[in-house]
Figure 1 (cartoon, rainbow, N blue to C red):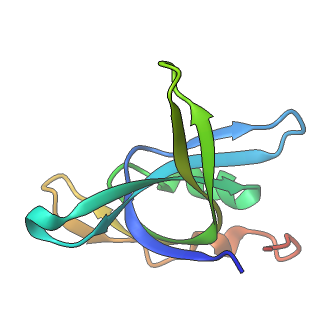
Figure 2: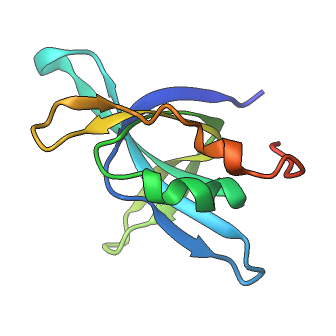
Figure 3: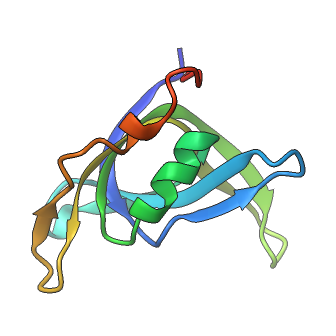
Length: 127
């Protein structure tokens, strides 16, 4: 079973796009930090959230917001512009939890109490 559970902060605002079949894709990157102090390391995870959930959550997924995600992880190889072989850590997100964000002063503020998924029709499959 391939299942990732992670908590991190968004590195930039989410970008919503559509496939040729008009399926929504919400793309965002999450910083995953391990360790602390001068021994802390950060790994960037490129995420995609498909369908109605992506459309609904895209405006809420803003740079600096702390989120929890669950999904399938993969390592995608690609060739960089300079011709070197590289790889990208990616996650097809199945579930998102909004944990909070940064206010003007850089202090974390809690996420809204209302669950944005309450507005999604009950007949949409969540697999």
